[in-house]
Length: 266
Image 1 (tube, one colour):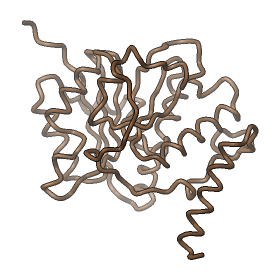
Image 2 (tube, helix red, strand yellow; image 1 turned 180 degrees about the horizontal axis):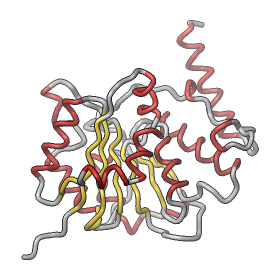
Image 3 (cartoon, helix red, strand yellow; image 1 turned 120 degrees about the horizontal axis):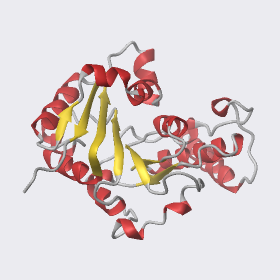
């Protein structure tokens, strides 16, 4: 058996064992001696082609979505109010769950194995800290195609776009997650006064996102003072796995946050 085949086999065995477990022992994140799933068994390419046919299941309309299958909390908001788009390994999703215990936070991730990791992570945290993390969940979804299938008009209070794929080649810019067309979809699901958060370590992508948001009539940039006192800015800067990696490498992080303007009067 080759090294690569053996590695794939070990990852598969590990994930199957995790799914079969009824009780697990976890370590550090929850702080009560239980261990989180190991990321090395859930590795996948850093990004995924959003235009590919991923054979995803999605509701035909938001009313068809049964959120109680994902969330265990019964108090507070029962609709999803915060969306972590392209949530990666779930660092921001779980941090927001602690910051906003009465709101439901949904991580949306297109990569299969990464989504499985976040599912295991949330399950581990719920086991480790009873009564917590029932307000966060993750689903595998292509947010660039099906966002309005999950959320009704004006449902979301906050949307996060943390360290998205920069798609450096110019011919790939159409695949960037911030474009004029997609911003109109985000404005549709974001309530008036809601906040759209962006962060990246790529200056060119930062300027791209700012330019498109500045040009869109339904978004306005928060002031520097507003960004500095918003707890979510601090959380997304430090809680995501990608953000931690950038910090370890002494890289720069570029933040831009925008408020959803009121619809113009007809």
